[in-house]
Amino acid sequence: MKTKRLTELSLLTAAALIAFIIEMRLPDIRIPGVKLGLANIFTVYAVYRFSGKEVFLLLVTRIVLGSLFSSNLSAIIYSLAGGMLCLCGMLLLRKIISESYLWLCSIFGAILHNTGQIGAAVLMTGTPAVLAYYPYLLVSGCIAGLFTGLCAQFVVKRLLNFRKGKTE
Amino acid sequence: MTKGVKLAIAAAAVIFLGAIAAIIFLQRPAQGTWVEILQDNKVICTLDLSQEPDRTFRVEFPEGGWNEIRIENGTICISDADCPDHTCVHTGKLRSEDIPIVCLPHKLVIKYCAPPEES
Image (cartoon, rainbow over all chains, first blue to last red; front, side):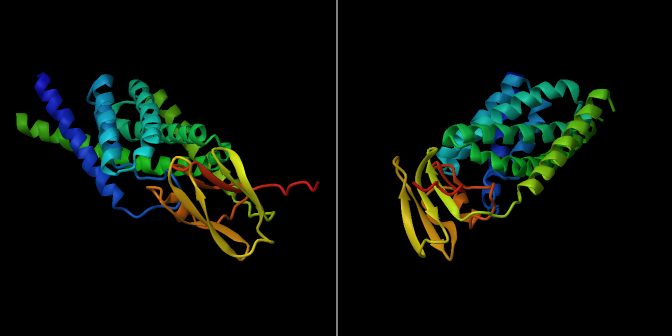
């Protein structure tokens, strides 16, 4: 059983990294920090399928390897700050929000991710003026979070049907 | 739909609409012509864009790296940089009073400021 869990987690990490690399190829948006966050699809899915510790491992591995692949190591602080806040929030929210409203949990995850990012940016640059980007990040975060959340919702639904089909 | 979900939807809607309102509020066009360039939250120079001749200069980042700043017809932008994400270059010209040009890897910020008091 343990090996199966580990394999599933590794598979999710690999899939998240692929999504991350595909997203790097998309054209840049003019506002710093605005991203679709495709890799978040797998984090949200994992939040509802695995324990907190397991999702933590998945996320940290994804962020560290992701920054290595994109050769943007200075971005790791922002990704980690955002990612950890997002993860803590979603782990708490999964107690309130049931799996059928997974997309809602994802929106809050994205909002928290952007909050952590901008917090880290303010601390790193020591410039509160960076906060001017926060509303932009919030709007884009809500939309991106809804999108990735719906994607994860479809994955859950498909997998459920798939498992049903297998047992029948 | 449980009470928690309803509350969460309401909270998300409030955040979304609040952020849109904030964006509209932040779209103030530039009022002055003075800009300051900050590195690591320290002002490294203050310029009056209406007086500056067109030119391009480099700002070095002490830990390695540079940003090339271009002043042209009273506008300022980062025209080139060796940071990995190039977001500062993509930001384009400085337009809004409230929204600065930021290069996070080099901790560089360009924003409008109040004219310095004459001494």
